[in-house]
Image (tube, rainbow, N blue to C red; front, top):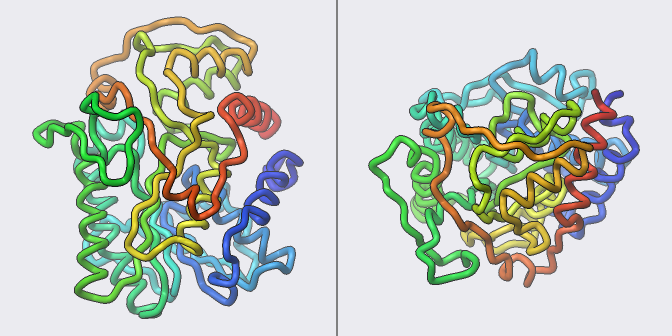
Length: 352
C-alpha cells in the first residue's frame, strides 16, 4: 500500500494541516527541503504537498537529496508542477541548487550511530558545509525569506546531574576529542553559524531542537536504537536491547516533530532556539523496548553491540528536553509514546 493511501497516514497529514501553524507565512512560498527523503523530510514534503493538493496552501516544494532514484521511491510527486527535485550532495563545498527558494528547511544530516562511526567526516560536513551552502542559496532566493536549521538534543551533551530536563540555555558535558563528538559538535557549530549569518548577512534563521524521532517514514538503513527496535517489531521478531536500557531520553513522533518545525518557522522568534518535546514521550530505553515489543507482539532480548555500533553510540544517560518555550507559543504534541509506537508499527506493517 502507498503511504498516501493509508488512512492512518492521511490522518497524520491532516493533523499537520490543523496543527495551528501560521500558514499565511508559507502561502505563495517556494520551500526548499534538504534531506527530503529522510524520516522528517519525507513527512514534511508530504504535508506541504497535501496542503497544496487540497487547495489550502499555495506552495511549491523544491526537494533536495543525494539520490534521485531513492526520491522517486519516496516522493511520488515528480509529475506535479508544484514539486521539483534536485539531486545534490549539500556537503560538497560550493554546492547550490539551481532553483530558487525563499524558505529553506535544512534537514540533511547523518543521524544514526553506524554512520557516526564509519563516516565521521561526512557527519560533520553534511551539517556544517551543507548549512553554509544552503544559507547562501536562501539569501540568493530571497533576502526576506526564512531559514530553518533542524538542530538536536545532542548539542546539550551529557547531563551534569544538576537538572531534570535541558532548557535552551543549558550546556552539559561534551568531550570534543572523540570520534562520537562529530555529530553534536557539528550541530553546535551550525547553530553558531546561523547566528553569524544572521548578524553579518541578514539571514532570518529559526532553530528547532529536536529529540529522538520515530514514525512511519522510518528508513530501512536507520540504525538508531529505537529504529532497530521498530525494524524487529515490524518483522515480527523479538526486540534486541544492546545495553541495560537505563538511559532516559526524550522521543517524539515524526508528525509532532513536523508540526513543531512549522510552529517555529511560522510563529517562533527569529534567531531563538526552541526545544520540541513532550513529557509523555520521555522514557527509559528498556521501557521503550518493552513498549515496542508489545506493539509488535514479541519480547525483549539482550545482546551486546559490535565495536562499530558501540563507537557510534551516545554516552549520554539522561537527555530530556524542556519544551516550555515552544509550548508558550501554543504548540502541543498530539501523540504520547505508546500511541505513537503502536501507530508506527501498524503503519509500517500495512505499508509492507
